[in-house]
Image: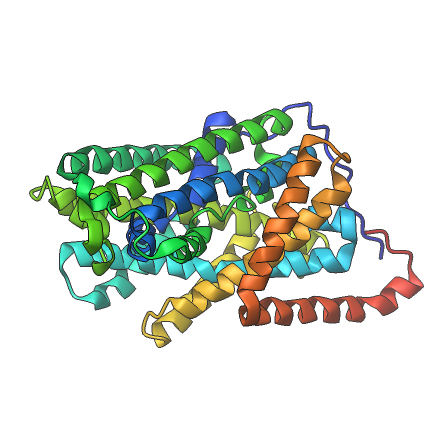
Length: 433
């Protein structure tokens, strides 16, 4: 049997249904995410006012990584996303690793998002925590149904969700700002620069996600134009949102910032106790739905591409082409989410193990992605230099990951085993991948 990767599409023409506004909304949801619910307060507890420096640093550092994946997606729009870039640059085995890392590893974060959003809603509504395990499946199920309806509907829903998310962030900042106290900015570095380093590590989770939209790059109209523009606009929106939230968190909550599990509630209740709870509950629901909507569609497109390329059963290949809905892969994504959520319930809702699997696999994907970019992008072009800077940054993230790299190592072994299993067929038939 001969398999092949379709030639890169003509990116100068129109593709799919996602334009600049919807593309920006997808990026905003994938990156802004659930971090707004807890990270500003955790960073403030770690570094005090110096956490503003950490946010600023991450905004600057995220530019080369976001730019690298935008340049790749604009030139090679395909449902395989990073796996496709790696296939073109490093071959089928490395691509299989990248695909498995994202599909089976990064997807561990899906139930985390659902449960985190549910727990926040439950906390602000002051009902028993056990209800979060009832609400979380609904937060997972609704985006699945929306994606089954097709990306055109999904993109419109995402535009509405991301727009509402930005509106409520602006509302929280504007509402809480009058309660700010300039004395909360002294001393500026209560825990020294080491505290700023801890805050930077926390915000790495917040600024991750630029690779997720690459899996639906083929659904963009004029991807070479709209993908970089969507990325640029999203960087501004995400950066401004986190910076504004960090400032108001420090200014209003001060030393008490890290003492609450619902810091956004504390912010709005400082000046608007009457309607603070429903607003914060709305924020949590909007964030969870928006993130899940963006990621579930990306996982499904990747699953279909893995089926197309023979890395999953070919039955899942349906819907890999631009404009088609990968319903079979969505069913597989739903099954994986159900298994992961069940494991989380058995772990009594402990999020840390699932977050570590998610982040370690994401860093591994980044590592192969930026190396692929150095080979695929025109040498010494803007995109190539962004990839070169990103390579140094990702190397640092790999060092920080340390023993948490065990899950991607296991998945890499599975990819190697798949290569070994397919090799006999490759010797009898010429295989072009």
